[in-house]
Length: 175
Image: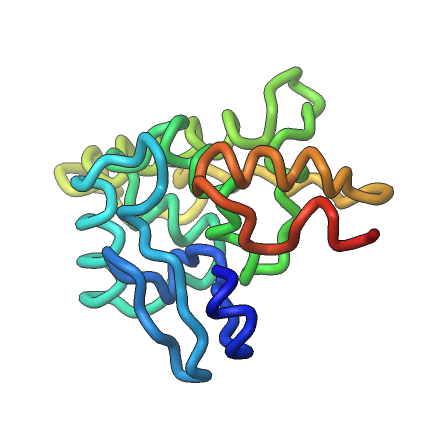
């Protein structure tokens, strides 16, 4: 990391639309952290993300990601991706995933539940006479609004816990 910083090379967080299995170099010449480097993240999930992206293109947003990987990405894997910053390119704040909604669940739990419903709906629709009726499909949960300032130190601590190092910033940068 120190050598990259000295050479002016950025090391970027993992990203569901850009990361490979291992470290790679993106279009801008920056190093992108590999998905297999995430702590507690299974290789089957890494392979599924990369295969889905290569077969059907980049993910449009977190909902598209969950729909396309329904049944593969569980809450723990999703939490790891959020804390590692793998959805930052979609414009979400990491804290938005952990906001408690009106029904008392965190948004991340609603997202996992939505993916389960979506998967079940897709399976049942395949054998149904009314399979593609739009009004019967599960509704996407609403992403909670970003409020206030994020606790950068808390975000960096979680990033270090799941990635093994500080990538997006360093706690001492402000000093």
